[in-house]
Length: 366
Image: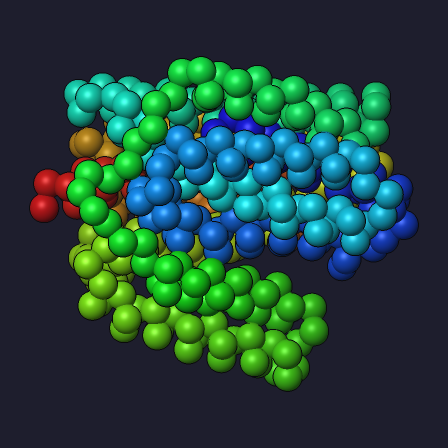
């Protein structure tokens, strides 16, 4: 998961990528959209396929695709090549993200899984810190391509370790992969991502956006109806109506939809308006994992002592206040106000993650 979290460095490099490849803000956003949207759309189906065909196999294939993609992106001459290779990187990332947590739960006994998953989360946090701070240094020193090329040796080392250490893990008994559900999930989520992306750019009533919205709704509704009759669905519809889990899913979706835009807009605001270099931008984005990682244990401790609804509501209020503060930033605002607003938003992230863990515990007990 370290490799996945390192991609946060791309946000630091967005202004340099825009200038070097001669593109604009509206076009360069697809570097983020294709990667995040592709990974998200694929993970549901890939997780089910990995259970059936082998976690180790999918993990290594994902690493190989990831390594090849970042190598070629670092050498790509034009933006279209970069965008196409980001889709390839998204496939690799989806394979890694779908199989890595399952490998952890398969390798470690039940009394040690919590520690192992916690360690994996800590490594991801360290990866985000290294990506933001180290990414700024790399961009200023060697250029934006270095943030991709620097990941090639790390990925190759990981592949060698996986081949040498990991054993194959599959679901016991004869299982069938829900290919139909995986395909519907991919199409539905991909249409949803494109709908949300193009809606603000082309207008919510433009024909393309309307078709994407209808396609996303129809596909996802069909998926939920068909999955009710599948023995091993890629998405269990019961999860969406669970009294504890459903509100958390809804709140998380709305929260991340509202705050994710900062990771894209903030680099251009800091670079083009405040006129600071990539190292300073990396330091600013580093507040995200540092504060979230620091507050998360407090959120977990509080979630054991109060209802998760109180904790989550407080966290969302902090988030709303931070978003409101961000909306007041102008060309005359200093970087100190950006750090303060981003810190408040990250404080919320750490607290809401604690509330989600407590909800998960309640769901397990139920």
